[in-house]
Length: 80
Image (cartoon, rainbow, N blue to C red):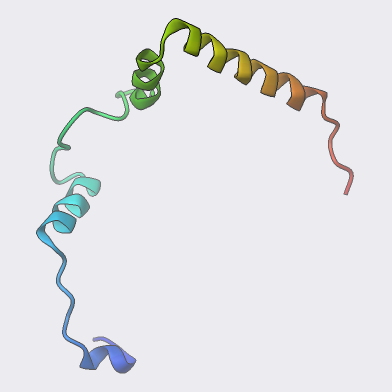
């Protein structure tokens, strides 16, 4: 039973689209479109994104990631 003022409002119905999305999340329906993760948990969207870049762009992304890791390693832990 709904409580408070909500009990006087008409019951909200989910759209068919939202209903299907909820069922997919619950595993009741297969997903449409390309998979986002492999069976072992690899994020396939990141692989697709990297492959969409040119070799020079991929190198730039990886160099930026290495730079970020090196900066993090040089930082000293905050004393609190």
